[in-house]
Length: 142
Image (cartoon, rainbow, N blue to C red; front, side, top):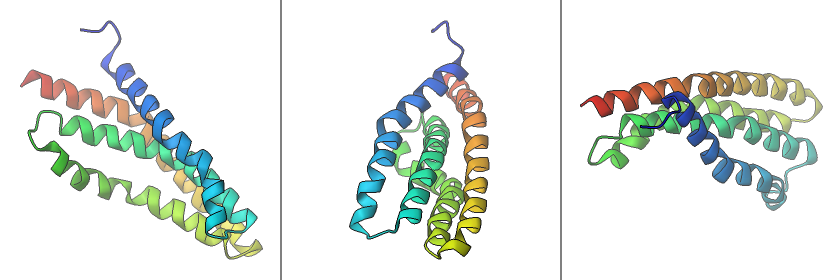
């Protein structure tokens, strides 16, 4: 019923979710890293990996939420759909921080892991509004 395309609405909802959950978590991560005694390079890598990875989490979550939109107990099925899709983001993000902990030699590996995380996040953010919109259209047609 909105004059905006459904894809743009989905992108706006993804951005709003990231701004309300992902960005505060990212901004608090250096303070939380102090609790774990992370060294400076690892703290910076943690901050960058969260800055890159949290939009992907919001985007994949939007796809899962739109798939379970018309189900009565969609909240039970949602983690089963989303968690396997988020595995690359978790693996690359945690791997980057782990490699940054290895010292100067691990910084190059951390950059590679962050590059893979950025590629995953870019693909997720780029494609998820279209997938979410298609899923919502499918749920509305039934």
